[in-house]
Figure: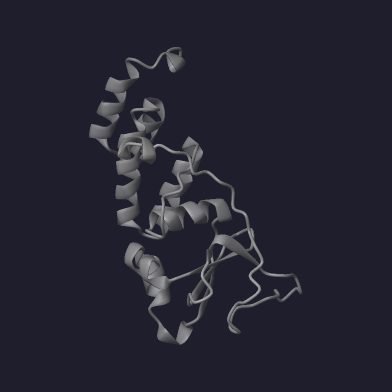
Length: 181
């Protein structure tokens, strides 16, 4: 498989939360309401000192270093040593949080499959001041343009990237699926 085709794979696997039975004592097993805490199946490193809590109450146990490196806002939140271990609630759905984390260098990028997913990711990038993430999205949009120039054109608009928009328009010439738009 070429590197180009590997980038276009769809890793849109839905979040499959699991229950982690052996978590350190400082991680909660129950919420204040008495409900069992659900940990994400991919981001469940019991040695991690940070837990991100998604808007749908899935807990992501992660190493804080990539968060500090990739986000100005999260760096400020995680730099206080008195806040370790950290429980950080975020207004991000677990599916979007998984994509966000994967693109901040927690492994393989899990790509959003819809234009709306990309737009949400760009909003998250802006909210948490992740300049590097915007660059990664731009790079992925360039590769994606070969498969879906219309979506790449929309991303180019969101990114205010004239060069990407121009490339997407050039690729639209052979795209008969959307000729009536």
